[in-house]
Image (cartoon, rainbow, N blue to C red; front, side, top):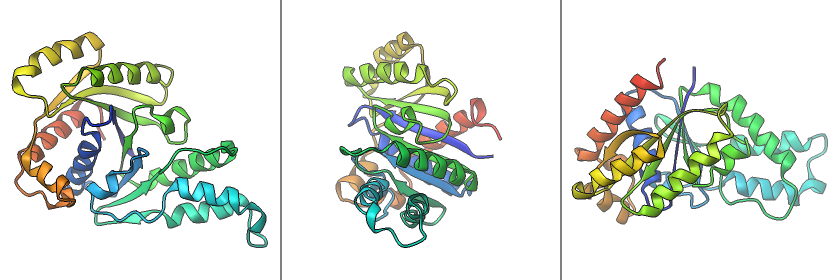
Length: 255
């Protein structure tokens, strides 16, 4: 059975970093194959995982709209699109990566989005885990271009706006109760002297506080030098991610 985790939050909270570390933790535990889905328009997940993304679903979607009249003889739009979707899967050791890419332009995307939905529903069962890095608006979940989510992790930091974003995400997902089974808040890079006040604010949100992820200079150094998080060795944050995943598997992601 496939288990799925979606990570969301305000830009700058480090959600993409946490998503990447979760993927690497699952691979280290030999719990693959893992499908990594970068559903954030900023598309940083590939960089963090050391993958050179050549093409995105957004690129493919635009190409299909431009080339409808010139499709190969005997090939339907659905067949052409599905062939392209398989080509944009980036393969790595223990995981594959799909990048959603830019948002929609001015054309009609309803049919193409339905194909993306079907593609994800057909593809996801091939993986033991699916981990998705989302934008704050959860576009691909709210448009139902992705499958059900077992656990949504909402990342917040000391910036009060991140809490407001968390509240907005909670509101967005209330209408998707059949799509998202559990929701949690994860704090990231919050100074110790500010954690207690932040935890009280999280209690007021009414969302379960799952874990605190501390600032880690080793992680920051890798990111700022443009290196993959796969190069992390004995960073303290690795143990925090391990502990968080142990807790998550106990309460929400049991096999």
